[in-house]
Length: 228
Ligand SMILES: Cc1cc2c(cc1C)N(C[C@H](O)[C@H](O)[C@H](O)COP(=O)(O)O)c1[nH]c(=O)[nH]c(=O)c1N2
Figure 1: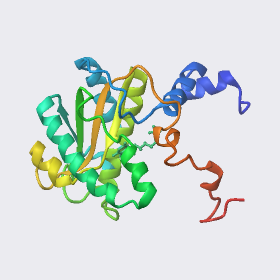
Figure 2 (figure 1 turned 45 degrees about the vertical axis):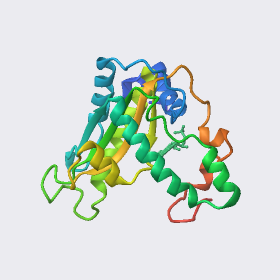
Figure 3 (figure 1 turned 30 degrees about the vertical axis):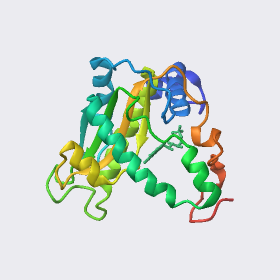
């Protein structure tokens, strides 16, 4: 088998060239969405497909530690937006001078504008206290939940649904608004709604906050710092 033979590659992967390109297209054009949400509600079948994609993520010891709290209520989303605003005031103060001005000019959430909020949580007790693969690193259940979020985010891209991850909260505020038990970890608040267009590049990059790093600076060979 020649290494880049198209037919052999398709046969080996089970993906046609068009299907392979579609995977990369979703990855490269996925964006974090803050302000371009359309107000029309997401159909239940679309939401179900996104959640099914999330639920097929890898998880440590096949723990599946996630839950998804679907928040359509405008009143609840308004309370969540207020919790964001309070935390965001604190966050802004942590940047100095012009950087603080620039921070305050960024729109960092679409909690009220997006018709659906999805709070994604992680239950560290989901499969008992000793978990295959988590014995030496307790964070593995959170990492698994993040894999579910990324699956959802990519599926959403293909469905024309924008997702915005908002993390500027005191966790206790979200827990109290949503009645989340103490032992459950809040991993993400996702704003979800249809979008007509997306930025070609990360919005933070377009707005001059921070640029994508060169990949070659981040790849080492056979040891830390060895990149030649
Ligand atoms: C864990 C985590 C947490 C957050 C984010 C992402 C992730 C992975 N991002 C989105 C983030 O800014 C964005 O992904 C990067 O700027 C890259 O842009 P694209 O996602 O490629 O559009 C994000 N964005 C935002 O406006 N408010 C936020 O609170 C957060 N929080």
